[in-house]
Length: 234
Image 1 (cartoon, rainbow, N blue to C red):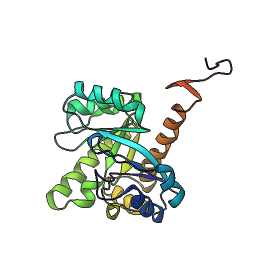
Image 2: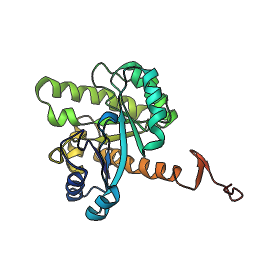
Image 3: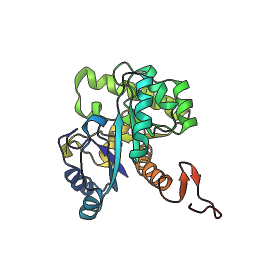
């Protein structure tokens, strides 16, 4: 299972500190999902060797409108293993689930965002994972926490009904905000998930990383086009 995190300078913890804590929680890996304007430098291989935790280079795009978003996707897609898109409005959510180059629609219910059956069907068709972000349930209180639970319950009903792919995350910005899988499973139960479903959402980060690394490897001539037995390099 994997968790996704915001490391320095986007968050308060270093990649190494996140990896050390993730190892203690028996995660197999972490996805570093810093926003595009707050990317950090880290030696993924060194951290992996030291803590026996896979480190995946990710990126979370923010945009004001679909036109701007499209430019960002074209720019960053070739540069990272996992590409996330920060949703939160109906237009941005729709752009994300219709764009197969995006791996994960992050924060679909935040702000003025909403999610319906049309978006769920598009996510399923294009293989865009919908994020169940537990950060507001874990770190908010009062009315904000109640609203977060309500939003994620609605999201779960739609995503599971239309069999759209999904990921789960605590969206930690500090190693202190990481939670063990069993704790995330308990949070998931408040919105109607089973423990197995939460674990499926945590594993999906690793599945994405494995798939995209393969696509970017020398076995593929271009994304989605695998080298055949008669293909030769020029």
